[in-house]
Image (cartoon, rainbow, N blue to C red):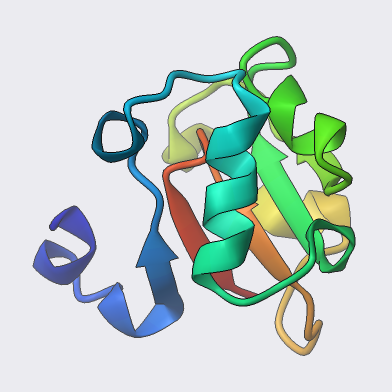
Length: 104
């Protein structure tokens, strides 16, 4: 898993991989599966994505949705802070592309 390769696995509660569920975004069932994976109601989850069409499934299940610019991470240094999601905020988010679930 790429999180382990970058030593980020301690920040990730789980991964909801679309192919493992036989789904493709924006299918809301993928986002519902990600929320179930971390034991949270969608209303308690913030989904952060960069594609308004593909990530619309998160809003369909009741997640709060925030968007970052579709740029390499190095070109968007404010990242989650631009959405008010930074250290100390206790909410969880389904991060970028609905593939992983990350603590914030």
